[in-house]
Length: 109
Length: 109
Image (cartoon, rainbow over all chains, first blue to last red; front, side, top):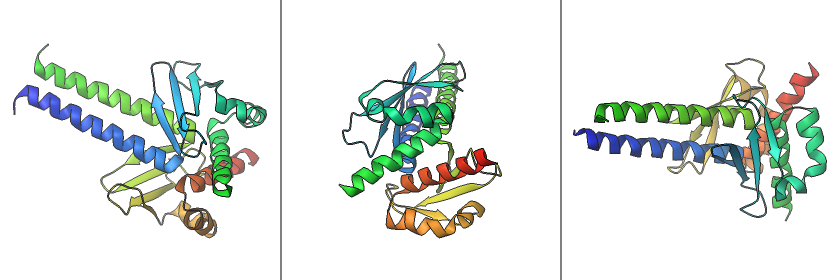
């Protein structure tokens, strides 16, 4: 196989794998994760509006600390963010709670 | 740049991107997702034993339906799986509930 073809084949395999990973991640956690240069955008499957996302910004080089930026969705759940995110210091616990809240709203509707 | 170098560079970029995605996914959701040929292995940050994982097997080609296989962790939470996973038909709701349960156990300990 020519090297040019090999490069194209590799790109295709990588894109397929990345797509599969994103799809599985979304199916399992309800969150579609998009990583941009500086931020992580999360869109929940259960959010009322599809564009309604959360944006986390890494505040340390290894992304061990992340800050939630203000969006429409973060303002909606603003009062409970302090407890779940700041006091418990767990993004995962906050996002899990949010998934259950949004899921509950969607299934009650 | 030689094509051989281009291939190596692509592999490196891909591995870095996948690693970053896995790390961010784990930090945000508490789950480390490993995709194998047929199954998706999930290890929770909050599980008592590090090797204690959940295994989902796709039962449809597009992975729109997935089945939870039996592991030590699935047996531990067995009684509540039926409600959360089968009746509510949401893996994300089940995994979110599990994260909050494991988080609560860990922070109470």
